[in-house]
Length: 297
View 1 (tube, rainbow, N blue to C red):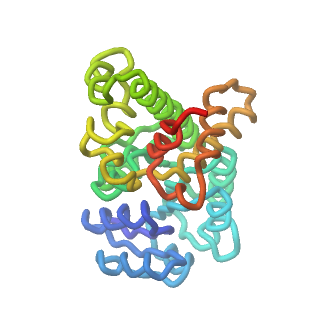
View 2: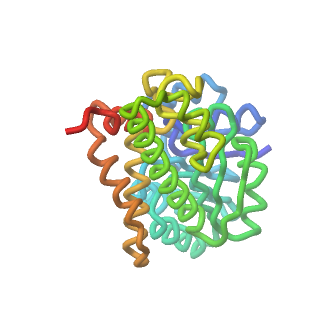
View 3: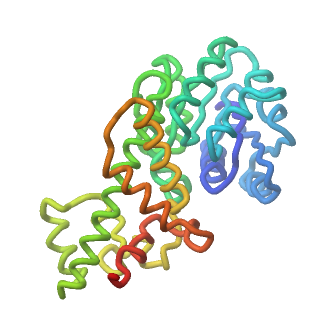
């Protein structure tokens, strides 16, 4: 079993760290939020008072942080991971961030003789809690094989996407598809209702036809057809509106950087940006149905 330093113990990182503890790993975690640190202690982890304390004796460092700027700060600033980590420590960043930051921090780690992987996840809070996440991993093959048993304690699928940054590339491409598909399902459900076609009937037809997609059959945005979907729980979040907006923004920034044409991705970002507010950003991203299904002007 490994000694693991875990940075970021929020809605995703907390359950991920708990699953590592359940698998028998020795986890020392740091988060600036006291309640997050308390949850780690209850789960059986060791609470660190700083990044340096969490990292100093670790064989593996994992991070789950909100944005690229937080990753840069945690790894590159004084007292951060690259300054403190012992030789041979494996670094794994599970945050969803921009490709440029992922590659820049990995290059800085390599310059210090440390192997680093970008390993963003799919599966949301439910997957983090259940240990059924999908990891999309960028980095050297040798480091990936070292990381595999650690990641498998938190997920059902661990996939090597290629060199550094490719894990982030896979994540933003996947979530751009997801955002577009969810909007398409919402629009179809809204249109069906106005045409007098019941949501359940459209679901039964489209789930067995060419309109079938995960956003319909596993995460249907209207109550009824998929009992486990957030639509049946007042859109309590598995993956929030704020997170979808963030990922769609990252996709647009990446597309602009390489000159890729993503008109539907751009429109999906604009719609989620319009929908996101203080009241809605914490809801599940499928709650955009409440905007799309509203009365026509």
